[in-house]
Amino acid sequence: MRSGRITTHKIQAMKARGERIPMVTAYDYTQARIVETAGIPIILVGDSLGNVVLGYDSTIPVTVDDMVRHCAAVVRGAHIPLVVVDMPFMSYQVDAETALRNAGRLLQEGGAQAVKLEGGKPIAPIIRRLVDAGVAVMGHIGLTPQSVHKLGGYRVQGKTSRSADVLIEDAMAVQEAGAFAIVLELIPVELAAEITKQLDIPTIGIGAGVHTDGQVQVLYDMLGLGLDFKPKHAGNYASLGETAVDALERYSADVKSGAFPTAANSFYTDRDEAAKDEPKQPAAAGRSARRGS
Ligand code: KIV
Image (cartoon, rainbow, N blue to C red):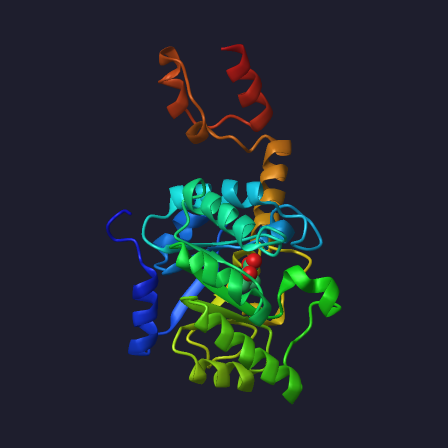
């Protein structure tokens, strides 16, 4: 372990101190550098990469190989945040031994410090097996995207008192199984507050209101990179998708007009050193003069 890497214990200490915990997803080296530079203490290599990076309409097709590859890239880019990686669909549900083998790959080949599993009470024995083997586990209840077909869509969970009670039981089971923290996705604010009060481990909310111990967002949603879809819970921190389209339109126009590249973007042979300081020629003439030199 590199010194200075944030640990699961440090994250739990943040809850004990009443310090809120920011977390965000990242899927590659450059994103990880940006997230680390911003001082975010936890990076989630989410299987949401199936949606935002690979263009699937759910996280179900994502494989352990996908997660290992992206996780390793993130770990190369970020040396301080705790890196948590999602175990993808069917990499842990079949049996505890399969879960252990796949978690082992994500830690050994991917370099993550912890794995995240979706599910409550039914998945608790798997969490227990991983924790007993020395794997740090983050739970995830509420809307669990890998179960989208069973849930009948991406909808808020725990709105009735019966379903809220089930989620409270799920949260307790995940904690008792040894998880160090738990994600609460798309549940009512009051329920998230109640679960946060009852649990000793940190709760990290997404679309679960302000009373959780931390918040997590999909990086692409939070930065407004997606042009077609921005979930209500993602906030409004940037519109990088529109910024990128604008930059690319200006680049395209400059390439077509010959305004790009300029001398400042170009390289010259030594005998051209003097020429580059000359006043800029009209675009077309400049290009042909350079080509002829
Ligand atoms: O895959 C993911 O990005 C997640 C977050 C939405 C919590 O699980």
